[in-house]
Image (cartoon, rainbow, N blue to C red; front, side):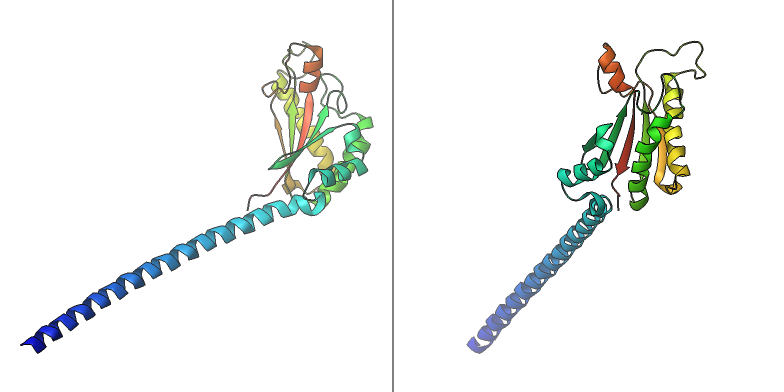
Length: 208
């Protein structure tokens, strides 16, 4: 009888051991799945980050100094403000470098500067978005535009057409007008209004 009790005890011990092994195996399986998911997420995020950075950074480098050097080489910083953020490089042309007051026709004097940008944009795979902005003063009665919104849009599309005619791929380009609704300075002073009348050309980082 004691023999069977030991056998039962041994069987119970074996069963408990088997249950422990199953539990341990399940835990290891879950851990393996967890780490595979984490690896996949990390890898895809890493790939996305590398791909997103690649388009701009192959040309502009990984820091501000290299980007500034490139724009200095092309003479852009002499007439425009260049800003670099996490998702774009912005080139800000303040009034009246590109346009005469109230006009959407590019000044001929702006052509050489825009052509320097064209040379850069042709080599980049990144999207290029042109933004038109104005101050908040109403347009005169003689204006062909009914609002600052229309003027800012027309100016943005004038710049877009210039790049298009110079050979920048159309699928890279977009244009939008914001009128007076995205000021960067106060409209209460002549200096502030002059800064708000601007064209911003943005090189957008890729989202993969």
